[in-house]
Length: 89
Image 1 (cartoon, helix red, strand yellow):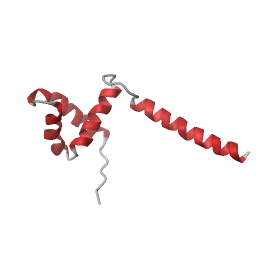
Image 2 (cartoon, rainbow, N blue to C red; image 1 turned 45 degrees about the vertical axis):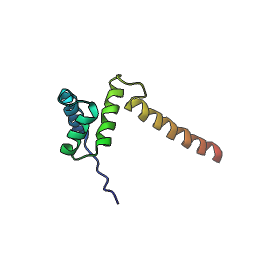
Image 3 (tube, rainbow, N blue to C red; image 1 turned 90 degrees about the vertical axis):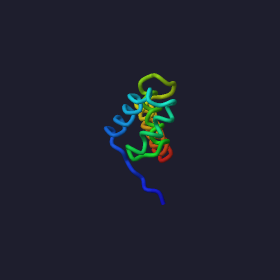
Image 4 (tube, rainbow, N blue to C red; image 1 turned 60 degrees about the vertical axis):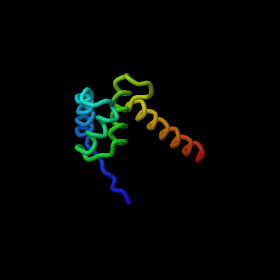
């Protein structure tokens, strides 16, 4: 069974910043990620996801930002609750 680890936002930001700062030291972004992820104590894929999310939030990649995704989730939850309430009436 795998252990689920929750990393603080500070750790995530630091890890992303480390990759960005050391990008020129490696032949590719993935090589930088694979070198830095063990130092943080996370999987390379996890760090890769954090970098993609940061790029999306900064407008460097297309897609919904974290705030937009959170808002959409809240609206979907509210919609489900309202449908249930409507069924009762």
